[in-house]
Amino acid sequence: MNFNNKTIWITGASSGIGKGLALEFSEHDVNIILSSRNEEKLKEVRNACKTPDRVKILPLDLVDFSSFDEKVKTAISLFGNIDILINNGGISQRSFAIETALKVDQQIFDVNYFGTIALTKILLPYFVAKKNGQIIVISSIMGKLGTPLRSAYAASKHALHGFFDSLRAELYHENVSVTLICPGYVNTNVSLNALSADGSKHNKNDEGNANGLAPRAFAKKAIKAIYKQKQEIVIGGAKESMAVYLKRFFPAILSSVVRKVNVT
Image 1 (cartoon, rainbow, N blue to C red):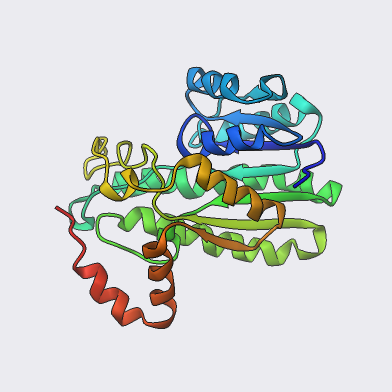
Image 2: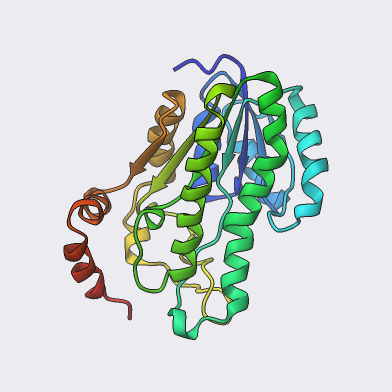
C-alpha cells in the first residue's frame, strides 16, 4: 500500500484504536495529525510512532463545536494539506435505558454524533473544493444492531450510519469517499471509560473487550479498507460477524440471543 505522502488527521488518537491507527500509519509514507483532549497522551503516541518528525499534535475537544473552524484551519496549515479525516473519537455506555439520565444520552450524542458530523461539515468544503478527500468513520458493531446496556451508544452509532450513508451519495461526483468501519471487540479502555447511568465512569473492563483484537491488529485491517476506499467493513471476531449476519437475515434469532446476554 502506498499512501503517497498523504496527510491523515485522526481524532481520539491518545489511546486505543486511535493510537493503534497512528502507530500503524506511521509505518507508511504519510503525515499524521493527532487529536484528542489529552495533549500529554498525544505526545506519548507521537514519540512511539516510527516517524515522529512527521507527526503533529492538535488538541481537540469534540464537544467544543465553536472551536472547530479554527481547528480545521490549523490542521490544514500543519502540513499544508489534509487528505484523510478519521473520525475516531467517541465514548461508550454501560447502563440500562430506564435508569440512564437524559443528560447522559445527550452527552453520548454530543461526542459520538454531533462532534463527528460538526468536524466533518467544517472540513468538507475543503475536500469538495480540491475534488479529493476521504472521510473515515470508526463506528461500531452497535451501529448495526443493539444490545443491553448500550441504548444511547447504539443509537448514536446508528445515527452515524444514516448520516454518512446519505453524505456518501451526495459526494459521489465530488471525488470524496466515505468509509464506515465497524469494530467488534477490541482490547481498549472503551469499557473502563464508558458512562454509567449517572454519567460517572463505568471503570470496569468487559470480558469481550479484554479478549478482543489488539488495537494494532485492528488498525492493520482498517488501513487496508481505507486504502481500498471500501464503503463499509466489519472488523471483529466470529461472534460479532455472525451477529451482523443474523441481524440481516434472521433478526428474530438474534433478538433471542441478545435477550440472553449476561449483563450482570
